[in-house]
Amino acid sequence: MLYLWIKAFHIVFIAAWFAGLFYLPRILVNLAEVPPDSVAERARLIGMAQRLLRFATVLAIPALGLGAWLWLGIGIGIGKGPGNGWLHAKLALVLLVIGYHHGCGVLLRKFVQGLPTHSPRWYRCFNEVSVLLFAAIVVLVVVKPF
Image (cartoon, rainbow, N blue to C red; front, top):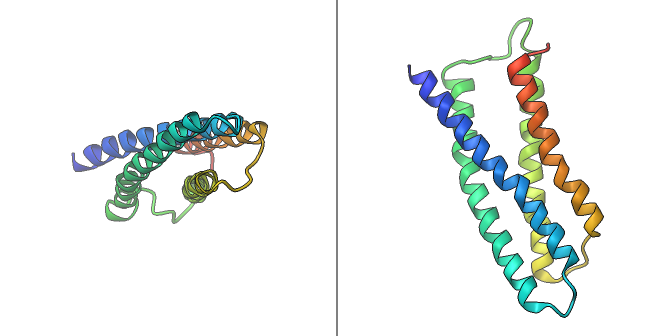
């Protein structure tokens, strides 16, 4: 029964974390499109992005902690033996998600510091990375293809 509670809350925190990762790069697109003379709009978007990054980070901690508990504490898919290759691929993608989350923070800091940033088109492409990572992880967990 404990397993089901941990799994349920892991899914809830993952979904909430990814909601932040889906929207934060969209705010970065908007920041990249703000005209230089629109100081108030830029400040508002930066504030929104900073709060969302903090919120997503807070959600990531229990998501990762509960995932580690399922993996190591309860022993779900320790990764030994045939048929557990999906777990190794999933864990690699989770590392990429953590890197993506960090990358969002780095990009936001560049906006805050007024450093040169990428084009709005680049941010639109960057925005899709979280969707691709999420879809790949869900497929690996549900289908367990290898």
